[in-house]
Length: 76
Image 1 (cartoon, rainbow, N blue to C red):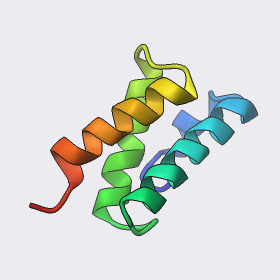
Image 2 (spheres, one colour):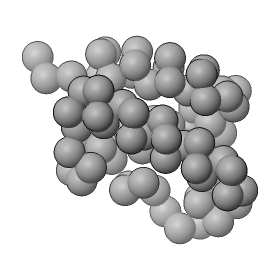
Image 3 (cartoon, one colour):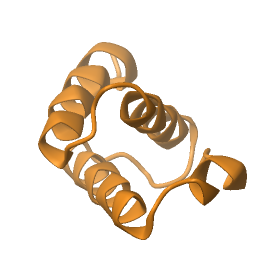
Image 4 (spheres, rainbow, N blue to C red):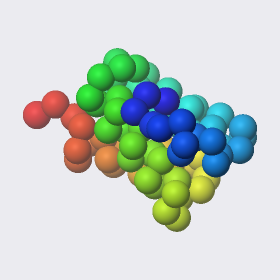
């Protein structure tokens, strides 16, 4: 995921990285977010923060990412 430091990714397991990528890709596809750029970076940072917090399942991350996109990333 773009916008995420190598140090942050280094502490994740392969399964966690795969899950975060799936959620990132799903949101990018659904909302037509280019994989590079400000919107993708905001989404990637949000996902890392949410995962580092209390959201640890793919379902919970997807739900939170949908809400985040609609409230913080979507074009007005």
